[in-house]
Length: 224
Image 1 (tube, helix red, strand yellow):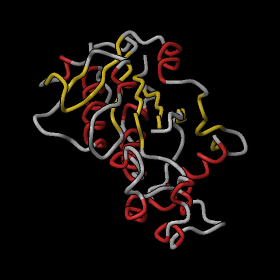
Image 2 (tube, rainbow, N blue to C red):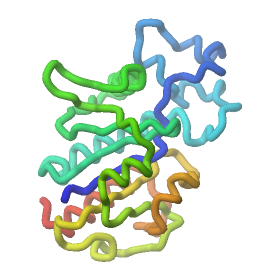
Image 3 (tube, rainbow, N blue to C red):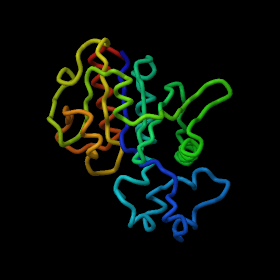
Image 4 (cartoon, rainbow, N blue to C red):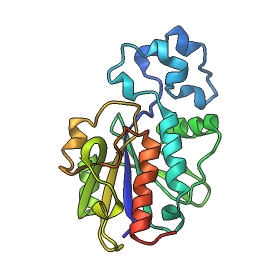
């Protein structure tokens, strides 16, 4: 079975209405520019102070690095990856692993803003990213996973891949990696599984943790 990866609580959103008129927002926003419509902490930090969950918001760069890592992996190239992104606003999108995510960050921001506005990214003949009209619990039920693993520095430490994955492709695993700057999973995410695993003595950036998790699965199943 392919490994299902969910990048949870991604800081991907359009600029919220409550701060749209802030000078820091107006300085950068342009009517015809998709990238300028996306909330970005690097540009809008001074306007974001009163937003809820501010430490998880406005970080499209984290999602960018995670997607580049996942889609560029042997796991993805071998057809053994199913990939979803889940936003803080509880929108879920399925990523077609044939997509070529832009390496340029500004182009990526434009793609994500277009996705949030239109709910899909497609070419003339293929759907590359599509909105899943379900919540996470409903999505997991539809996947029929045999094991759901949350990865966090607060979890139980494991020291090798055999402690995480079986050495076959028949078990239907779902792994959930937090796609945010700092903090911990929300109660909604924590309710999905009691298995919380740490893969390092140190807190890891999301894209580093994701790469390590994917590497464990590739080693366990001889995907090179």
